[in-house]
Image (cartoon, rainbow, N blue to C red; front, side, top):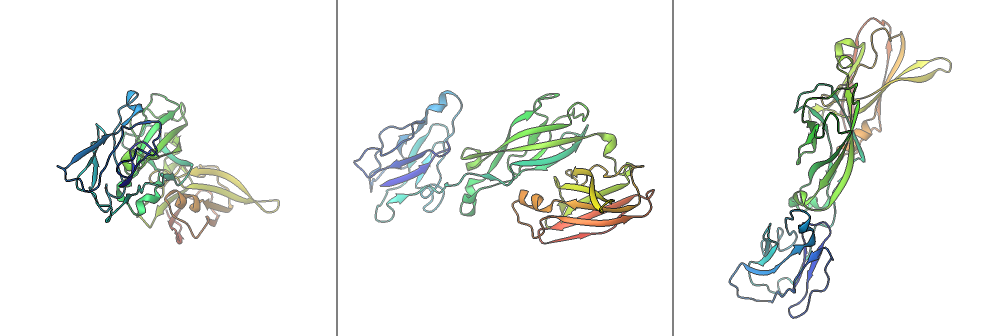
Length: 337
C-alpha cells in the first residue's frame, strides 16, 4: 500500500511503500522509523502505524497534520495523526483493489496578490482602527477548503514607540492598530513583514510587505481641505482602502499635466485633502485613480487599468468633493459637497 502524506512542515512528503519493503524516501528534517502498513489488517482500530518526528522539535513546538486522499478528502478518515505526538494511525483495513495510492493534494503554497500593500492611518488612532487588508490566494483551496490561509505579522520597522503597534486578523488579513502611540512627526511610515501560511497556518508559506503611512491629525480633516475625494467599492459595499490617487493640473506651456499631490485612501476610503486652502487656482484638474492595482490586490482583474476624472475649478474659494464608486467593470463619479 502506497501513501503520500503531507505533514505540517512545508514540502516534507512521506512515501509509504508496499508491505514488506523499507521506506523509499525521507527528508532529512524528519525522524521516521521503519514503517509497515499491511493490506487487510484486521485491527483493532485505530491502529498506530508510526510516530513521525521532526528534528525541529528541539527548537520550537511542532504540531503535526496530514492532508490529502485518505486524510481529509475522499476517502476521508482512513489515516489520522495525533497533533502533538506525531503518531500516525490507520482507522480501517486497507484494500489495494479499492485504492493503492493516497496522494498529497497540497501542491501549491499561498501567493500574495501584491508584493507590497499600502495603507494609511490617522495619528493617535485608537486600537482596533482598520488600516488595510492583505490577501494571499492558494490554488489548493479550489478543491480543498481545509487549506485555509492564515496570516501573521513577522516584523515591524521601526519598532517605535514599541513593537506590536499593529495586529492582523489571522483569517481575514485585516491589519489594525493594536495600541496607542502613532505620531506622524516621529514615525511617518511603518513597514510590516507579513506571512501567509496554508494548512491553517502550519503549511507552505509566503512573505509580503505592508507600508503604512501615518497621517498628521491636522492634515486629515476633510473640512480643512478645498479638494477631497472618497472611493467606495460597490462590489462589496465597503470603502476602497489603499487605492493610489494622483492630482494633476493642466498648465502652460504645452499645455501639460503637472502633478500636484499623491495620496492613498485609508480604511474609510478617504485620504488627506488633495488641495489645501489657498493652494487652489482656477483651471483644469485631473484625478487619477490606480484601480487596476487596487483590484489586483483583492484578487480580481479590472476592465479599466485606471480611472481619470477631469474637471474645472472656476471658484477657488469653493470646497469641492469628488467621490468615485468602482467595481471591476464600471465606475461612477459625481460632484459632491
